[in-house]
Length: 76
Image 1 (tube, rainbow, N blue to C red):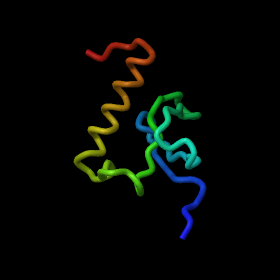
Image 2 (cartoon, rainbow, N blue to C red):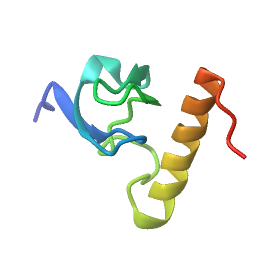
Image 3 (cartoon, rainbow, N blue to C red):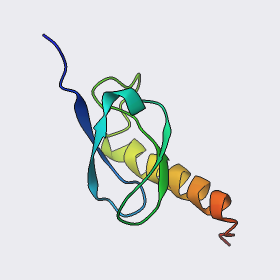
């Protein structure tokens, strides 16, 4: 069964659900709502389950740190 051409991923900064085209899988993107940068990861095809409760917060924290580093913002 073929996969749909898009998958849903939450922005790690603002939490908005985003429709992402499969060809962007693994690429760095920016949220159109908040500008937060993240890597497009299809949760259904990812090698580990980033969406379980214990890992989800760590994933979001890593993405937020990457976003801050990209904009030169320090988190103390």
